[in-house]
Length: 139
Image: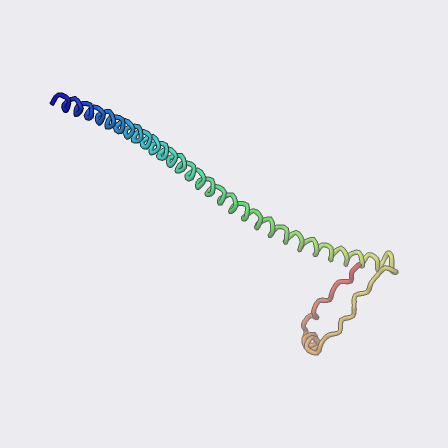
């Protein structure tokens, strides 16, 4: 019976050692998994902060784009007005130059083209209206 008890004691000792090793391995695995969970939570927190910073940057960029668009629209209107006034000034200068040529350099003077009135315009003028404008002679 002593031999039987000794063999059972040895068997139980081996089983305790094996179970203890398994327990330690599982505890290490749990600790590793907890560390991985903590790292993942930290990564999520960092990514959330980066996303919110990027969203704020996008909002600021949208405001900047809207301001730039308004500025370009205003500059475009100003440019169109400038070009219109420039072309009008060129026409006036051409007319003035031609008028000056009439007196100072008659060879370069270009007479205003004779305007032939349509039937409707002749009726309008004969009733006291003003004739339609003619193009200024270029020069």
